[in-house]
Length: 116
Picture 1: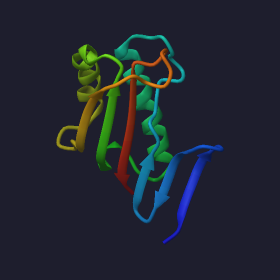
Picture 2 (picture 1 turned 180 degrees about the vertical axis):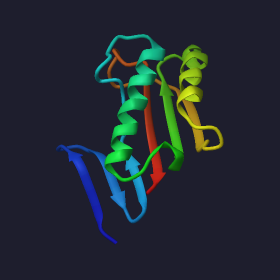
Picture 3 (picture 1 turned 90 degrees about the vertical axis):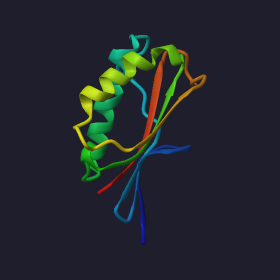
């Protein structure tokens, strides 16, 4: 089975396809640095929607999601945006973790694995 990498630079790929599985690198709100958690979460999820569509998938096919929050106190606001975004009955295996993100202007980072 081949591995296809898209949006690749010297250190990573934003999208990797292997068979019928789609792997996305951790996504952040590049269009909304320094915005509040709800706006950053919505922007990040829109980026995920676009990458999944490019891969021939969508949010109803999510398998596993890891969400990192710079401050776990942002969980309720992030989670509300998540609940509003995800269709009912399509919940993936999910972990939410507090951790320092690589860039201080971001409050949330989300990595997903999905089926095609």
